[in-house]
Length: 564
Image (cartoon, rainbow, N blue to C red):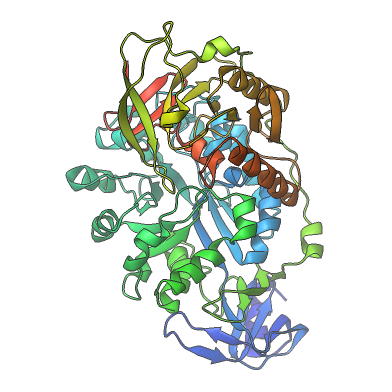
């Protein structure tokens, strides 16, 4: 009997299903009703609902509500700081059965090899990892990355079973001004799916960007921006990550009327926040607590997400759909009790059956050894461009402050919350070191350094003391990348991320515990940011307004140029 005939026979009740969920109520995402009846599964497919079935295995879900598996519509698994396999083990038990990822972080370090690593891993994980092809490696020409992928290098990566389309097109000026390289990449996917990334873009420029065939957007940070993009046909992805927190701002837009065009995503969320708050389950219960109708919240997390990305095989609990099912006690609490992913019960035993893909990207930190003197700022005028942090956003302000010049250097001034920020090229390309100033950390002593530095992933370092900054940066080379906190010549805490300088090779529980120690160490320096490490990482991303820094200098993102 073929798989097709087996599914039909089991759906009709002519033979037992492989697995039957009995005793629960199904949330119908079309009518909003809670309906009773068994759910019958054969292989990875639902074959029957709203009836009585027999199966080789019966799972009693009495008293529970059954909803479709959650779909994270945009994220970078690397930013969870663990491998795809540990991300799977961390997040799938929370109900996330599909993750649409963009591996541009690892691609910016080791190129196509990193993308192929994710494609290979997607074949083994319990959750369905869909691997978009990165569109911007590097994100701009204003940074030094470890690799460059043009259209010719992307073409051989297309066609993998995990693929959907082209990942977030961050170089929006390149699109609207018809840059040849951008046009060549868009041409590869013309008529297919292309993800968007266009913070604050509006008017005719937004029209031009959407006219390129770009269909989704996760960078809206206020209702007015999101509403214009919705009105112009873009699918809006509400984002709530460890740094980028847009849920509260955009929640009023999510209604039963708009839910078909709105989805949920995390973008960048670390294991500590996942442990303390949750993942998409956290977003769902927070939305409902803020007044979003439960039907709208669950649609955005499931069916709307599937429709937005052309995944016609999932998003509902219905015959013929992929068997991605989450059992919860209450819709409002989104308290996950059981998860079925692709017809498999998500258990420790199921995770143990996976064959893990060999790691890549070791020994990728090839930075020059730096000294305290490398962090001096050479200047002949007091007026100074300063990056102003907006906590909870990756947008920054372009501030200007007068900073005195002493012995040819502008020193950090913690009393005014003006501290040194530096980026050190770490791919072994040119050894660039750029310095500037940032406000918002409230750091008063010591230094913090990281190789998670979007999207080029050079070494980013902030500090009030040059010697501590040098120690922190040099320590990252010794541990193959990661996070380091230093004070008075001593390392207070660190997390090694030896997989491309982005991911740990340890269990996610170990990473979570190390993040607790790092957060405490950062607080001992005076830092008041809830998530200083990923906040630091985004200060080097030159496609998010208004002021950023790369290894080539301070970047005026509004003008899309390096400040001389």
